[in-house]
Amino acid sequence: MIKLKYCKSQKMSWQYALANNIFFDEDGEDLFSCKKMNDNFYELKRKKLPLNLYKFYSPTIENISDVQNRLLWLASPDTFNDPYDCKLFFDISSFEQYYTIRSFKNNHIFSEEEKDVIYKTLSTKSHSYFESFPYKFRQIVENSNNESLLAFQKELWTNTSNIYKYIKNLISDKYRIACFSAYMWNSKEYEQLMWAHYAQSHRGFCVEYDISPLFNDNIKDEDFFNIYSLGKANEYLLPSEQRTLMMNGFFPVHYSSKRIELSKTLCYAISNNLCNKKQRHDINVKVFRSIVTKTLPWKYEQEWRLIVDSKISHKVNHKIPFPFAKRIIVGVKASDELLRILSDTASLLNIKIEKKYI
Image (cartoon, rainbow, N blue to C red; front, top):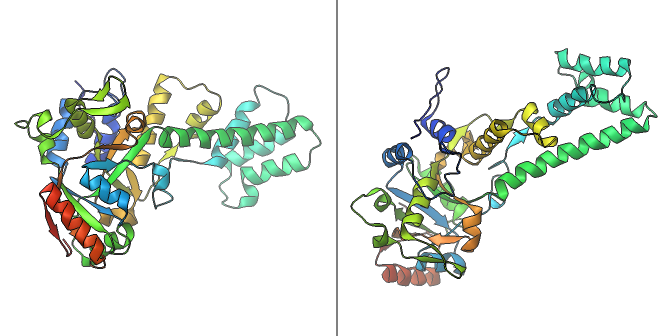
């Protein structure tokens, strides 16, 4: 059994304490695709996960249909409105400097004088661009007729580009996400921002979901989940698997002024396809932290995310059963037609409907 490990040297939020432990179990299995739940994570989520979560919708036929059919759309991180959301960064200059200096041992492209110029960029304390590695390296290339040096520059650019692609694939190809709000705000201004950003400026609607059954041991899996076809013969998601998938996948967003970055040494390992087991683990943890971290201006959203392995998501066309709708709240600018359709939807699902702010 895995025990949660907290950082002793500095205060760490419970969100990150969970993030640093949840990604792999003791056998190295990804908890977002496996069929088991770790007891420690289960208890922490039982205590921390809000019983009610809120999701805002634009007024599209697709969204209404999903609510009616008790389905939940899992989006690609590439579609999120914040361009920095779910992004893992690395310092290009530091990586290229490190890569270049490491290359000194393996080739004779650079003269001793050129090496000395590059070495000095390691120790410079100046913030001037003209003392930086990118500038000095560009000068060396421009002042040289050495074709090998030009080939090395191309190699450096290619490897930098490959790291971008590697990171993008780890995030976009690995995860699909549904976003919710805990809706624990103390300001009408924040409430209106949510409606403006995610419900087409109050023209859409919001659904309140009661997810408490997930952690009610007295409720059986089959009481709220049916066997769900994955679209292939003899391949299904069983009720117990659906429940575990959600208990594993719900995760709080951590808000920070610091962005998540890969170190230059990890980038070098990626560029040379030399990642050992520990480095792969460290990269995956960094990737995971990047998808549950947002910048401080978004803190008012109080976001929780349901994270699902994309292989599972793809099999069900990125829509999973989500039978937890409790209430529909209609935006104040919603059309009469939308109100009528949502009223019929609420009647179908036997839940409440209101036309007002929560």
